[in-house]
Image 1 (cartoon, rainbow, N blue to C red):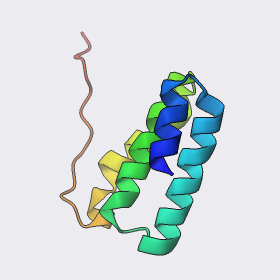
Image 2 (image 1 turned 180 degrees about the vertical axis):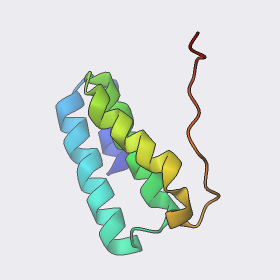
Image 3 (image 1 turned 90 degrees about the horizontal axis):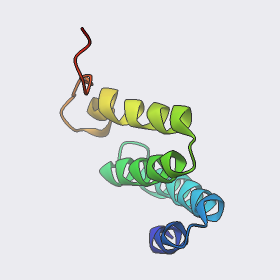
Length: 87
């Protein structure tokens, strides 16, 4: 599913790609469990296509979950750092 979603994304068919990535995420969570690291890959893929569509808030939320909750996935916890310094 991820491969098909990637092809759709490369073709600029972002809505179809988003749907396919969402289905892949749901299936991975169901089959592998929400704590499996491959679920993070699906979350990242979905966030990328959301960003390409200009759905920045949804993409940001997905990336925030990936950064703040990796301990939930058995990975080291990492607190998000701002990309730029404010003066």
